[in-house]
Each structure stands twice: as C-alpha cells, then as structure tokens.
Length: 108
Length: 115
Image 1 (cartoon, each protein chain N blue to C red):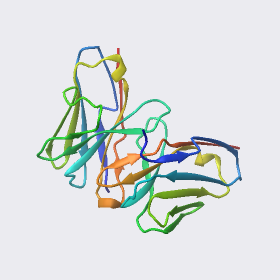
Image 2 (cartoon, rainbow over the protein chains, first blue to last red):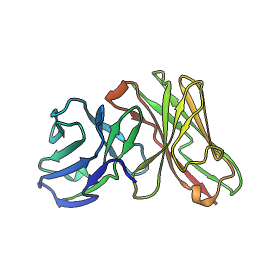
Image 3 (tube, each protein chain N blue to C red):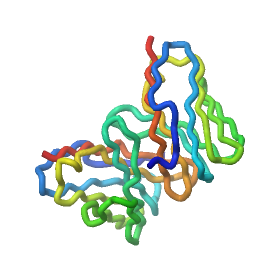
C-alpha cells in the first residue's frame, strides 16, 4: 500500500488548461518533495516544502504544503506539451516514500 | 553538483545468474542511500535503505538474501540481484541526499531484464 495517496493517477488535457495534482497522507512529514520523471530516467527534484502552509512557485508550477504537513498540491497554470510526464510526490521521514504518481499528458 | 551515478544503465542476464548494480555519489558523501524498484507504469517502491558501514534495512516483503546491499564507502552502494528470475526484471533506481531533508537526487536507473 502507498503511504501517500496521489490523485489523479492519469490526466490528459489540452494545451493552455490548468490542472491540480493532490498528494494526501495520514502521516506527518518533515518535508515533502515533488519530482518529475521521464521514461527510462530517474526522477528529478522539482521542489521541497518543509513548513506547514508553505507555498512555492516555480514558473507556472505552484506547490503548496498543507498546514498539518500531511498533504500537498501541485498546480500547473497554462499547461504546455513539455509538461507531459510522470509527477511524483514523496514524503520524507528519514526515508522517502513515493505516491503512486500522476501521469500527465498535455496535448497540443 | 549533487550527482548520483548509477551503472549499468541496462543489463540483460540469464535466469539463475547474479547482477551487480552500482550507485555512486560523485560530489558529495552519502551515509545513506535508498534503493527503489519501479515496474512499468507504476511508481517507485522503496526496497531498502543502505547504510554506510552497517547492514541495510529492508522493506517488508523484500528478500535480503536475494537483494544483497553493500555500502562499503561514503560514495558507493551496490545492489546485487542474486539468482535472478524473470520476475526480477524491473527498473532499479538509487537515490541519496546531499541536502538532508531538502530533497534527494536520483541515479539514472538500471533496466534489468532477466531472460
């Protein structure tokens, strides 16, 4: 079973649309990270959130950490085909465990 | 900076043989490294935590005698898949953290195919 519940698992949208991916857990994490993975490669770190309620922005990506440090969201504004990939959240409590991932496809 | 190198990137082996995968931190020291397995279209599943100078900690359901982990130095951890079977075919990825709780960097993965 996944410690982190990530939703949706699959998302197919048109270029220019907005989307939000959710990562939820019953556990409290010292930090939570979001990664993006391309086929055949290892995940690449996008952001780390540490403080409850924290919001971080990375160009068109906005990441939020829940006040209780149990959940997080990733919002992409005006998605582009280059955003296509597998997005993974991971919670850190001296080891790192991943959510099931969200496979995003952005159609031109 | 903060590069983790994993080798080999692809390996094909016969059933019953053993395969060793290396994970190196190139520009930082890692007392802890993590090994994951990823099946097609699935997420990463933590297999074990590799600790420099001590025994690895295995997740429930992962056979420690089948997946041998050695973390002999602060920059190298190895995973040996012993007596490989076709069901061991998977994508194996290691990671380490140069930033403490602020994130991890991953190797590029090893695609293992057992025939």
